[in-house]
Length: 129
Length: 332
Image (cartoon, rainbow over the protein chains, first blue to last red):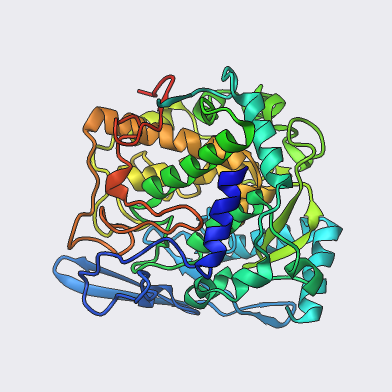
């Protein structure tokens, strides 16, 4: 419809700028000019930190996973929640008790993907796009 | 005038939903993946970059694809504390309210029906059934088969092009293909949430609280499904998360809005938030000076194409100001 076409045209004309404007940046040092924030130290690649206070003691638990699949380093980040569950952005609704189980889910998705989809992923990777 | 959102099993708009989805999936935008890859969005959120062959990258996205990309970007745009622009923190409920309303408006536009209201799937009702009966419940007659490529039913003609690969968490543009489901086969979520899960979740009177994340003991975090509402809590996906995992297939990775059942699930999630707001008062936290940026009451929520809104603006969808929608019935 005309109104959708106009919205798309306006989005293109804006240079595909997100409509998020300026945020409420009242935490010093975290603001980004476009209203998003830098990732937390607990959300980087490779390591996760859980911090909490227990009976007046400040505790940090650093967790680092190094995963290989068929001998090749798997460069994705696993995160541990406070209850010990493990999560992964690639399957964003999973929170399960073990990294072993979660990597199994990733492999399940890969193995169970239809061949046309796997071929499309490979074609993109081979073109380097 | 505010439209009525009704149960997909009885909604007069269930057929229009399917027709609208198919229309949006066939309606090209003027936007190609190659264009958005050169945009400031991808500079700010590199995981928003779309991978594909040159031929696919230069073919325009459909409107349905654009909704999927919007969700993928939001999910891959981190906020402090471990959440992102749409999940893992307080903004989960209001961001999806805005997102669903934009789809509702798009379907109103393409169907020419200003009275169209999104249907919801009352999955807690189906969660009362046995595991085997959940796979033959009436919902599947509305959305197509529970397992395998969806090539029959109301969405049998739906074809999608943006797919997240869980192995590398990249979004790819691929030759058009059907969505896929794997319902009931995941040992971590073989059944749906039920009425007891819903009642216990609604029983939490605190919308959200520090640490404002996936560990918070709050209504939002229980509704999103990171924390079980029972005592002691059980591990594993709950509520909203559990519905994603239960369906599986296309509902698994960040490109999950490819499957129209995504919106039926989130419409029911929104209905539960609306029940909470009705019971507890139309309030939202964190406010100014609290919580992670991107999740506060007056932070702009991430949007593409349509104007952004703030959580504080979407707390009453039937208000005279918004005049968006109301539900035919709310859970108690």
